[in-house]
Length: 318
Image (cartoon, rainbow, N blue to C red):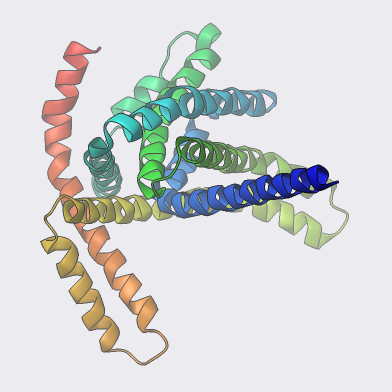
């Protein structure tokens, strides 16, 4: 009997440890997931371009192919690489994170610059202008997965930096949870966006009331506006997140002056407003400072990337 009780005690202890581990994973995944908002929104805004022009029946199968490629990028390539870096070269995390933040700043600023001074996006145009109709779908999917790899690398690096140091298994599980959850959110949203026109047309054609037909028509007319809003929010989020990564990274590397300056501005602004909204004002000022930093850095990088880095990459990689 005592042996049975001891066994039950052991089982109970293991169950408690497992429950605690699940809570730890959920907490780490939630904390990390909240920090990749800019990349996620940008991913959701960019991907619908890759199914443009296809028969409606092929849209969801194409998105599913891209989804599987995204999961492969995150789980098979990037997750093991992140764990190896965490175990054997943790000092690389902050510099790589800052490199990803710099890329976000460039991408966000390039979108702002493109809006102010319209020009062609060579990378996207190269993926979309494939020439051969027979292999159009395959090449579109490969182009989307290539773009996803860059964004997924940023997501996994940001996630790794946000996860508190723990056992390799908990870190791996948290990374996997974030990877799967974000992929599901991004490509579930993309699927909904690309099919919303069809849903709207169906509702407008089959609804038996004026109100129902108005909803269907509204869905069709509202999708371009939704995509514009999504793109704007994604750009702002990229600049904010990218700037925050740079200022925090400098602080971690022993250069806290910029982070402290933003913090002092935010605290001063919070102290000048009525009680009850000071927390929001402090967050808002910090976000605006980070966004301004991201935009300024990105604008400086545009000529460097377009006139120096891209030609070099085209020469040695292309």
